[in-house]
Length: 451
Image (cartoon, rainbow, N blue to C red; front, side):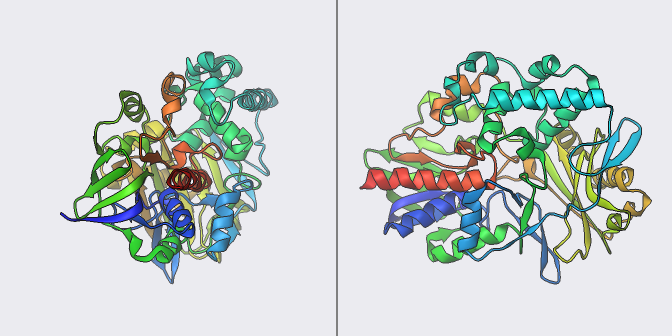
């Protein structure tokens, strides 16, 4: 097939790829963006619920310190509104259910102190991890040589304290603490600021939402780029040599001077490269699995939990949903409970029939919020591990040994090929803000090389 031509070709029309394309066009260069899905947005996706309202079945939150995505949204005219955070939170642990206000649950003070010590230790160690090169941390080998679970057994002295910290790790990484290295957790925490910023609502990463849903940010970027963005165009081959790269999809081919691959490492590794990628880079893609998460919404005529003085936020030790939020539209109608199935529970329940999985989720909502949660008027879920062009969320996680053996391949260009995606970010890695940072960085690399 005859090839189109551009200065730069971008693989993937998520936040990272569209940000890179936007920067390149602003610099006066021509770009083509190829997206495998029939839509833009990548890991952000709106789901219409009627009356012009949506819920997000992908990434949705923005919080303090996430200045890049905030600036981008403002430029595009996308406003935010606060996540509903009024009232008491619910904690279900073992067979006991309690409520509390603020960020500190009413539990045994010995356990609280234990959790506080563990979180303080995480924050203290995280500050010693260089964001540009975590593998160069003074104790990188020791930290990357153990799972977070191994470290937690030494850092927290109580069983309940360890379980509460585990819940935080599952909520952030969508994997089990035994699957991720201590160094990776420390890097993640440093890239955000503190462990508390990752897990908190008010003042944390879950503080605000986008009016109209997060996908509207990518839709407006794509609209500005116009015909440069091509959907339903999965990239199969990437030929490169010298100053030329040719990207071949099912529907078209594009020749360019540079390429930016903005998909997760696991998916980047499934493209056929000619010549093949160096083994060091290819092995990185083999060792960066995506998290396991099913995002579940139940819809009610009204947010009844608010009448009970509850925020809609709950945490529990399972089975089923372990973290919930009030995900209602800004006007509170309909009432929407959001629950996450993550890690082992996501993998377990992804393999059962859909009605059985729905029942497990609704049973969790009943456990947290009482019998009025038992009969939602509608239910929507998305299992991101089943999505062909994502294969998991929220992002990739690194097991022991990956950062120290392969970390230097994460952003290093291969000839004319550059890498983007939230996994390559040094600030707010794994989040929408990190995706934007990665797109800006990759575009800057490409523009400098073209100059």
